[in-house]
Image: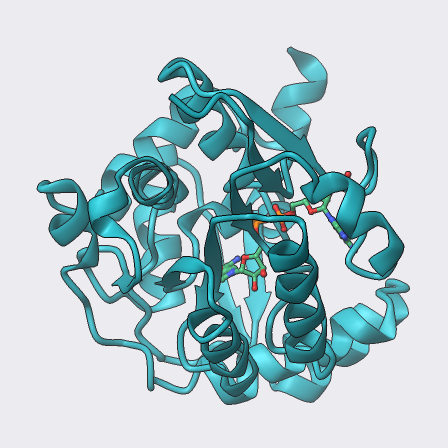
Amino acid sequence: MDHSPILIIGQNGKTGRRVDERLQALGYSTRGVSRSTSPSFDWKRPETWRIALEGTRSAYVIYQPDLAVPNAASDIKAFVETAREVGLEHIVLLSGRGEAGAQRAEEIVKSCGLSWNILRTSWFCQNFSESFMLDGILAGELVLPAGDTLEPFIDVDDIADVATATLTEPSLRNRLFEITGPRAMSFAQCMSEISAALGRPVRYTQVSVDTYIDALEEQGMPDEMQWLLRELFTEVLDGRNSQVTSGVQEVLGRPATDFKTYVQKVIESGVWKAKALQKSA
Ligand SMILES: NC(=O)c1ccc[n+]([C@@H]2O[C@H](COP(=O)([O-])OP(=O)(O)OC[C@H]3O[C@@H](n4cnc5c(N)ncnc54)[C@H](OP(=O)(O)O)[C@@H]3O)[C@@H](O)[C@H]2O)c1
């Protein structure tokens, strides 16, 4: 048996943390990396890549901030070349649906000569509880330029289960899995389900993309993230990705987790306790 570790890029992130937990529970050795680990790994510092890769056999790869940014494909190309040089066997790339940049990166991985998997996923449910939409929920109002677009939000626990399967079962290699949640929902519908389950009002407020981005600029959000959010809300979230897929069922032999189950898990974790309640607790 090969005892060399499985590399996890973005170890502390939404998916990496969960993939790491699952692999360790199965007895695999892992090496989780990001800018704050030792060895460190920074997509903006290619000199950190080789040392992170050396001695690993497979890699779970998330790109930062997103495969949609202009230099993503060239970074992925340079990364897979380094991975080949150090003898990596297998790469699992987390990708997004409907992004031209993501699809360029996918093609590079598929043709790089290593064995591969692509996990092309819909928007994460956990954006509501572990990312940029959390503050809106705590404040009781989520302000976004998302319109009525339907999105089949996926529970990140499902992504981690699929990633773990692809990293550990050679029979799944060299396949792209398009994975989504089981229900296409609007952001307003998500807010209404969260609000009903929480038992307090959390409403969705629609604004124009320009108003939204201006507000982010006032809050000091870096230009790259402003560009990315504009891209996501104009190019990617236009309905092209509303279709539900059976990717989770195909890999795991069980249905994808419903949004209601995700909401119950977050309520039990306490993450959505309103700030006022958190202070008085
Ligand atoms: N959110 C969605 O709905 C969605 C949907 C489809 C695809 N995706 C893709 O998912 C990926 C993100 O995965 P995730 O949500 O699991 O990760 P994440 O939670 O966004 O972040 C993971 C970790 O990345 C590290 N990081 C930040 N900048 C970095 C850099 N320059 N180099 C190396 N590490 C860096 C951070 O740790 P340190 O601070 O320690 O570096 C962070 O903890 C993106 O490529 C995105 O396109 C997201």
